[in-house]
Amino acid sequence: MYSRGRLRASVFVSTSVLLVCSAWSENTIGTEFDALAPDSSIEEPEPFDCGYRPTQLWLEDVQAAVSRWEIPNPAARVIPSVRQPQSLVGFPTLPCLSRPHIFSFEDTNQLLITDYSNGSLVALMADAANALIATHGDIYDFIGLWLNFAPHHVLGTAAYIALENDVTGIGTELFNQRAALGLNGENLEGMVITWNINFNSWQPGTGSEAQLTRIALSHELEHRFGVYLPDLVDGRQMQGYGGFGCYTLGHWNPAVDSQGSTMGVGEWTGTNPATLASFYPNFHLFNTDTGRMWSYTDLYLMGYVSPAEMDAGNSELRYMDNWDCVSTDYFSSISTFTSTDIIATAGPRVPDFMAEDKHYRMGWIMIHQPGDTPTQAELTKAVAIHAQQQIDWKLGTLGRGTLDASLFNDLNCNNLPDDIDIALGNSDDVNTDGIPDESQLPPGVVLPEITVELASPTELRIQWLGVECPGGFTDYAIYEGQIGSWYSHEMIDCSDDSANRNELVQFGPGDTYYLVVPHNIGGEGSYGTDSFDVERSPAPISCAGAVNLATCP
Image (cartoon, rainbow, N blue to C red):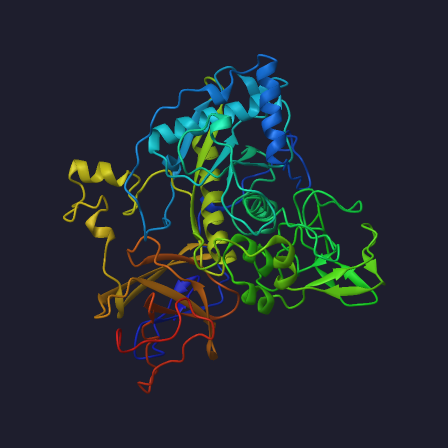
């Protein structure tokens, strides 16, 4: 058994694909993972206030700044070509982050301590993003920006700027505004500004003090997909910009009951009255169906579940037909709807959940004033926040997606870019694919050798050995279950992110056990055998379909 405060030896099964964890009660992690002490001298927005604005308004702000001669016309910039680093297909995220994975950028003209305009803010963000892309390549889907100082003013707790949409069926048009804003590269889809890292509300970890941080980051990135749905055929309002007075600008109408989410969808319980748990701007609420940031309806819009999975996953999907936008107790009629109703007005999602890219990369920048570069403490705090964001994305997407917060490829986790490792001879690259050979172990049967360590108060690092399957299995999944209910395992992680048999997972409450299972597009391998040498039953919902022992016994 592995206890989350200490190690104890025990044998439960005949193979080591089963890892057992009991309830943890001792904090053995250092202060790097702890919330930083509050600073009462710092003023900040409270509670969470989303600074979302439609893309067209940002463009108008930039054009207005150009007309006032505040900034050069970004659309007229001569944009140099940027290098294309080695593709990491099949290596969607890194299990390790460190301070070098935050890019420093100087606010040379001290714009942000003046009464800056929205247009000049966007221009500065674009300059910082271009500098990052020029340094590390066109590899980012999103770029986030911290400050290490108090700006003159802020736009909400955080704000998302949409740059591209290539998805139909979510209620917004196709667009690409990178050139209009003078941004380099072909991949960047959006930018997020989160303001001063020293704000007390920004905290790492999973404790109550970190709740706003986790909500804000998941909320802002969902603006990429989940804010635009049109009304249903019968006029019931989902998201968007209109309505009858309820707050819905770029968020869910709280009259929708989908068990809550960080995007503001309501959590109504009961009938006559139905009681509203919370809604914007005080919706500090995770979804009660998934236990994570997003509802199944959000995950459909994001491309992580099918329409059928959305309908099956929502324990309720209701609409308060005559809600007055104020009362938390509702006594009038309640209707229901499904994905079919959404598709009837928004159209089918294209690409669908099978074709949609589920792995994203986010580069982080810290903007500083001249002579005031980020401190080690500021960088460490940001890194811890990003590490939790990676975990939240994986778990929030049911183990199907990843958000890689690294600036450069570092698959062997030594804080150096892989291409530098190879060039210096620190790592071999026999097949010349740009990936250190020690990071590329063929997946397959899980061997008895398995180790685990406590990585943080909420995370375990699981490492294992394996041999290649005859069927050429390409990945691993990790399942978690409750001790005593030995076939209760459910998927929590569907990919060995760096293909190095070294994975970071967040453990659940109570006494838990874990299974490591190989898989590829054709199905899953063995879940191992019990003490009677009988194959364990697979999870009811798996990462990769049915068990196929013929190709991976």
